[in-house]
Length: 324
Image 1 (cartoon, rainbow, N blue to C red):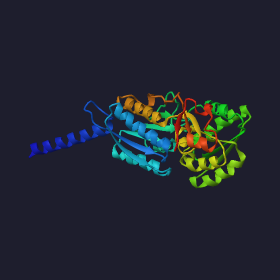
Image 2 (image 1 turned 60 degrees about the vertical axis):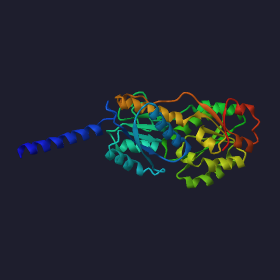
Image 3 (image 1 turned 90 degrees about the vertical axis):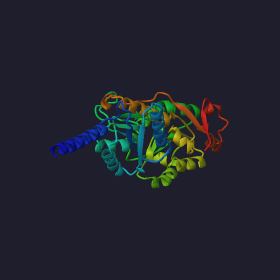
Image 4 (image 1 turned 180 degrees about the vertical axis):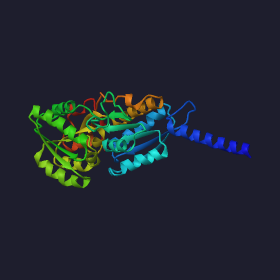
């Protein structure tokens, strides 16, 4: 009887030890799958691509992973509870797409690596101690690209621009940082920036219609609320023959005129490379935030036609064309 009891106790202890090993590691030489929880803040082209690029690249890098994806549809109250659920599910990594998703995950989970994406200013968002040395369980990829570079290229095509309109979410710290940078550039050029904050997408239609008489160009910054409403905004701009610049390709596919910005699919791939480093044993706190250096011009041909500028060679030179 005592021998039987000892055998049973040994089996229980072995089972507990195996469970602990599986939940505490990311991957080992036995090739166990990596469990990844993905929190996507909202549904629009840029964030979708950041997710797709991440998943594709992890497979390319040979990481055998299972993914659980939760899109919180811009409901920030759901982010911490989703992160805690992932923690309870024993995920090895959390991939948080957009600043609110990253901030909510960071506040809820301290012991699981969190990789963010689509965050313009990680330091201002207080996600990292510094971009070079994140210092805790959070690092990732920034979607920042020089506003000055983009606006200079835009002004080469539209040198008559004297006022630029911007709609942005009042709840996104990244948007405020972008507007500050844009205003600094505009002051040097003698250009007026007309920025209007929004609290929900329900405010977009009225806001863009009130903005149109005050501007002769529009800048679609990297803002989740405004990006989600790009189709509505671009329709009004086209009707009023106002050219538009976007920080990335997604809004151009939804009607904005052009971008000299970054590709979010590539951003997703960069995030996957960070995940691979963590899987291979590097500490999250030691992995610097990644910033892209290369831009791509994308032009919406239909929008150019609506603005009667489809014959402009300087607009289409070395550009990728979309026509949605």
